[in-house]
Length: 79
Image (cartoon, rainbow, N blue to C red; front, top):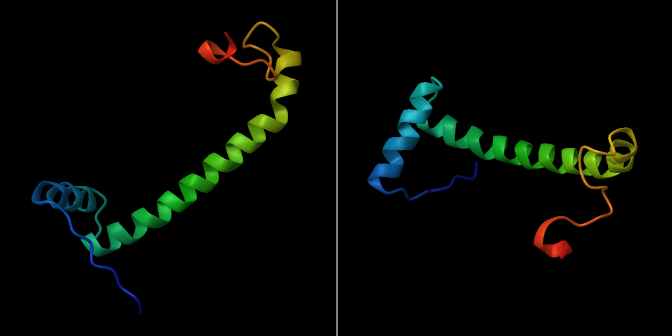
């Protein structure tokens, strides 16, 4: 099975050990799970952004005073 050596500073390693202990996991299991959680987080964010973009027009119609319409740029980029 492939493995990976990861270098941490002493402070970083202590923080990771503390986080693993807080979750009741070994250091190895915590770091393994962390990488998988990050992949799942990225997929969730992508799906949420896609859903938001698909429904922006509906939101604009239902709540015209809540936010600028989806097609209009905001902030300095709009000026």
